[in-house]
Image 1: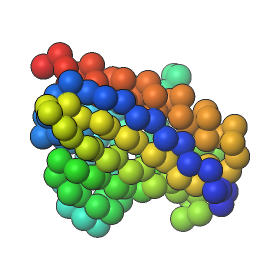
Image 2 (image 1 turned 180 degrees about the vertical axis):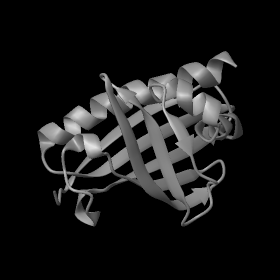
Image 3 (image 1 turned 90 degrees about the horizontal axis):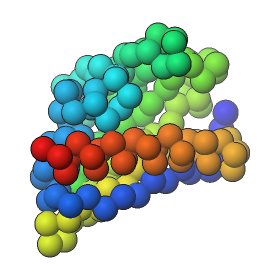
Length: 143
């Protein structure tokens, strides 16, 4: 699927970056903002990351690897979902980059996903990620 299109979602959260980071890396919070997904990882660079759940009635087990882990600033991981219908090959993985920038107790959270094959594919991904970052905002600002 070698794709050159990037899907990007950005949201401002009324909380400092350390609070947003805590939500992004907490299994219970992830389950809440990531559509009921259970995540397994130890967050070390090079470690596997696995997401399990049910999406539209289908069980899934997505996977990836933690590439960067810079607390309070940046998390980068690969991601592959068998629900995509594609073969589990390196060229079918996306890279998800979570970036946090804070100022005056507010955090701008940006999530980008590379390797989309088309503008339409990137727009579809952006719609999903827009909902997800809204969920991060809701969980972070509520607690």
